[in-house]
Amino acid sequence: MDRVIIFDTTLRDGEQAPGFSMNTMEKLEMARQLARLQVDVIEAGFPISSDDDFEATREVARQVGTLENPPIICGLSRVGLADIDRCWEAVKYARKPRIHTFVATSDIHLKYKLRKTRAEILKAAQDAVRHARGYCEDVEFSPEDASRSDFGYMCDVLSAVIEAGAGTINIPDTVGYAIPREWGERIARIRETVRGVDRVVLSVHCHNDLGQAVANSLTAIMSGARQVECTINGIGERAGNASLEEVVMALRTRKDFFGLDSRVKTEEIFKSSRLLSHITGVHVQPNKAVVGENAFAHEAGIHQDGVLKEKLTYEIMRPEDIGRPSNKLVLGKHSGRHALAARLKDLGFDLAGPDLDRAFKVFKDLADRKKEVYDEDLMAIVTDEVTATGAAGYELEYLHVISGTGVVPSATVKLKKEGQVFQDSGVGDGPVDAVLAAIDAITGLKGRLQDYALRAATSGKDAIGEVSMKIDFDGTVVSGKGSSTDVIEASARAYLSALNRMTLTTVQRMKEVGP
Image 1 (cartoon, rainbow, N blue to C red):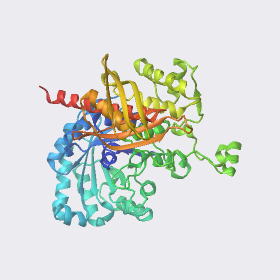
Image 2: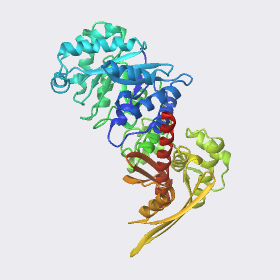
Image 3: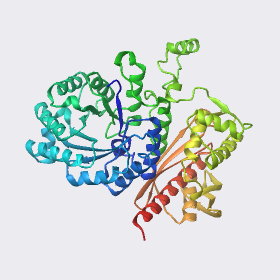
Image 4: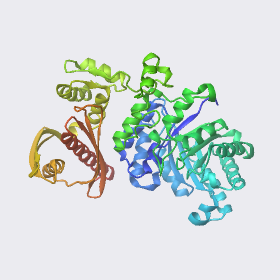
């Protein structure tokens, strides 16, 4: 193969990491963006792990896996036959379904976790692949903890599952133990040793516990692997997975060295990164490669002088290549709807109808308050407003807060829902707490704040503040996001976003269960 298959596991391995869980609606939102990014495979979930994960995987298969030229929609399963049955029930709606089954092959896992013999595990792996092949042709197998597995035994298992019908063999560095040279040698030896390996796609899944995930993935490619399992922003268990944007841009930027590329539409990378941060409320560190805020920033005088004369002096990639805004000042208070729509389209958001109307209203309100409106402001508007539940949920109409030293913070809030207006007041330990209390009084729902994060979308005292929250509504934890130049208003919008998501999820479940 002259290209590398990009297998995205953001919605499965990435979502398993603490603080990154997503509900069905959020997974669908991210999956649609991954389809626009043109990843080859979306691992949508681990269907047997929970009813929510089953539902999310099924909906991704139904809605994203049936698009024109869709990605492969994959579900993960252990080698238990019931796991595989459940996985198939979730992914079968996709045009191109895949079952990914796995079992550990290291003696550490066999002794302490599985308490099985090598012979029992080999048979279970082979039986699982045969069972999965009864459902679909596209079956992937992974020997968990491959980097610490006995090489000869692992190769016996791989030969057996290839004989049983596996079409992709994935070699996971499950605990991030491998070092690049050692990992490359192991991949090369697998190609030399395993029977039938020339008939399958060889894949790698590398974790970042020692900071080597991307390096190990690229070394594996050099040793013959042709699929890389990775995640947006490198999220995942513990220290994370190989970062999709780093792997893809390394192949693209150094095609002279690797002689390979991917089919990923790199102009969608930055938008994908921002959307994931928006959904999870977890932002990448400023110095993150490719998508960090400082990735294309220059402060040192020598660097600035070089970049002004020729960008290639200090930039090996163009910001435009990953879909990152290059020109800062975009629009102002005199700009019209068509200008906004055109600029948003340049940024990767093709809005029309009610979505554009809502974004335009918020843009005009913002332009009246800010001297300069930046691309980052526009992206915050769109991800906040357009991905919200809209008219189906509560909308903020009015907000008045009294707070200060020696004053009991109080807030009056007016909300609108389906044409009706509701108003109430609340007090709290601070202005944000008072606002949330007022919203609780209106809705009759009591949310408990689990996490709160505030960041500035742009520089300056008039910057948009982006607030991310995680709220516990009687055991149901949902995330919410909101943005405004007023951080109290942004907090109110974030809380309403979470509340509306929780309400929508409840309605969806009631419809699923029936009367």
